Length: 388
Ligand code: NAD
Image (tube, rainbow, N blue to C red):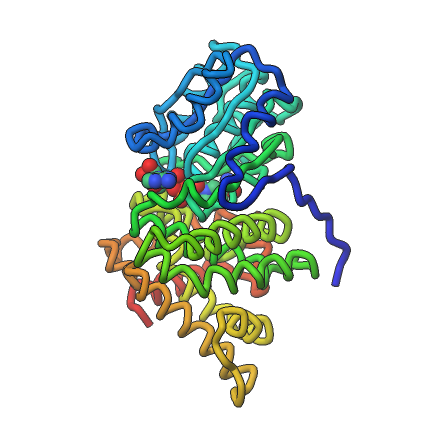
């Protein structure tokens, strides 16, 4: 095992009712003007008011920004950055799924930088982040991305996705209250839940895995494995929501430190070219990527099977690793996500373009326990299309 650099930040509050820590956290910064970045759905169902009303009651000046769409395109990020610069805010609160949180942290940092968001993109940007920016508090309302504990902001481009990444994008505080996820619709619960599972699985088999990330990843897999079906079936199941919230938080910490790999690298072009949500893109690819790289991490696949609560007694490591892939397939099916690319209306003619963009994600692919070259990527997309 090599030396691991671990960042288990930021200061986090977790658990049912942990939203009560918002006011004291805001007070620490004594902000004159607060910007709340959230999405229109959360405003519509009254979740946004749950955080703005107590702040306004305390006399804070609060501006709510709702120009947020799922899988935000670069232009959405550019608009928010301009708004944040103009408004001279002193604190940014992100409330929502990964889409709102990613935009909130991007705006908090770029509010004090020059240039466009595009200038800071990982693949094509030319500028470097140099300043911490405005303080930020991130409050997830989905159990999926782990964005509240990572230093990444994901933006959608024309045919793929790219990230802005720097430790200055880490939140000053994260508040992970499962109560805020009760209203998440079943379809989103399924997609975000498999996203969280994918974070934990990819972190566990990553070449950068370490004992600490292993512990987080395996327990996340256990919590998600035992509760995802229940949360999808009945969003009001309190214990299932608590498990999914803790699971996604721990999976976030695990993948932030150990990295994700092939599933995410291939999911980005799928999201970019076909506007399939991040969770669903990961879900449809998870069994195929893990099936393809299985032979490079047989023992780890057996561990994942056990963490999922499935018995491997009497099975050889090899058999258990195959069974783990079958479990992924079954889980994706059980939560109602199509199990092939064709199920998302992706035509076979698109596989070459997907491969072209997938192979560009070199930084992510580097964490795969099996090197994935262009032919491997082409084969994986083909099997996800054929369903075999
Ligand atoms: P999302 O933020 O796009 O939200 C999906 C839908 O769920 C939206 O329509 C939203 O209105 C709705 N929603 C959210 N919370 C709700 C609630 N409590 N009640 C009712 N509806 C609710 O989905 P997501 O999967 O959380 O985020 C996806 C984005 O996060 C993608 O852009 C993805 O690339 C990014 N991401 C970021 C990281 C990171 O580390 N920064 C990691 C993984 C993914």
